[in-house]
Image 1 (spheres, rainbow, N blue to C red):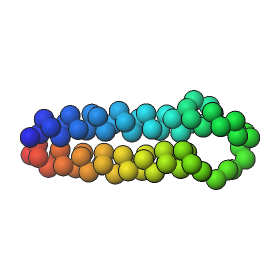
Image 2: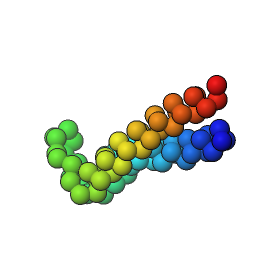
Image 3: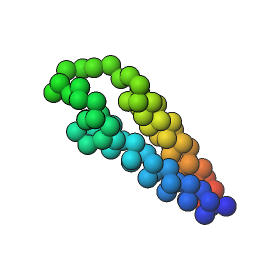
Length: 74
């Protein structure tokens, strides 16, 4: 059972890393909108907001899996 948690942890961590990288303005989807004003704050809308929510959700799952993996391994 511990092995399943470890596999889920690896998959979740890769997805979390990908979602964080895509949020960077110059690297991922943020640069596609053409609205990079170099420091001017803009409200998240559409795909950026969805990606932000997915990142939060993946972080919560990651933390829960880490805690569960540690509890199962003891």
